[in-house]
Length: 341
Image (cartoon, rainbow, N blue to C red; front, top):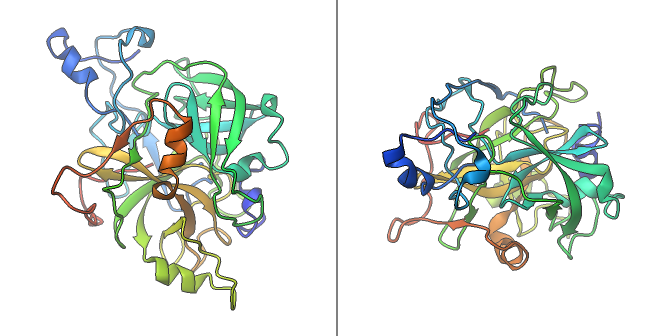
């Protein structure tokens, strides 16, 4: 399997349950929910089902972003619920998993631009699978929608490891929100991610170079710390004038290696929790190899492109720190408030 030096190689062939009626409306107002297979990650397990159901098409307003309805996740290496990351989608090419992405609204998905290299004008090749916990057994509550068009950032150069590796995917029709299909929040200007902030990544990519995720292809998750930008720049320095880490990128992972995103996870989310909601902090973009020492994953920062997304996507939801709460705190590895895919 090619190394992550080639960013374009990452994406190769890789009822709503409601509370009792008395609390229905407050439940609907809660902020809503947050691919390369994750090397060293963990599978998710099915969760308990509620007793009351309602067709998702009857939801009167879009759900708020960043809060899954299943709130009993466990952090620290244990399996998690199958609706833990309801915004994570599989972008498929000719029916096969190709990249991951994140749901922003009922009509828009965000992912990495390099996933569409050489196929930008061929949207009919692609589809988006939502609400699938296992790709090998997506279930009757999953949704598959065609792609109408793809809008890469105009600055993206289609080169390996290039800046602005971000794209918006317009779906052919609106999806139905449910406990398995919900949007993620974008960070507002109040968000700052200091080094050692623990966030999460998720996807269906390879478990290591050349080893695809085995059947039934269960969605994987991995907690990763944010790495200081200067440290990451030194790790990826390519000589005078050849710095690989640009101002719109951020790094996350483990310098000792062994745990990382890998082939097929490209375009998936780097998710951080703030004030109880999950924010899309970054998009899985590139790296060198999979889980190699001193080669952490590189992500496109959503803070750098939030305004661009807002200009194109109507109804995208922003979330930030409560007034006076300061920067996003660094979550300790055993913190119970952080969870990611």
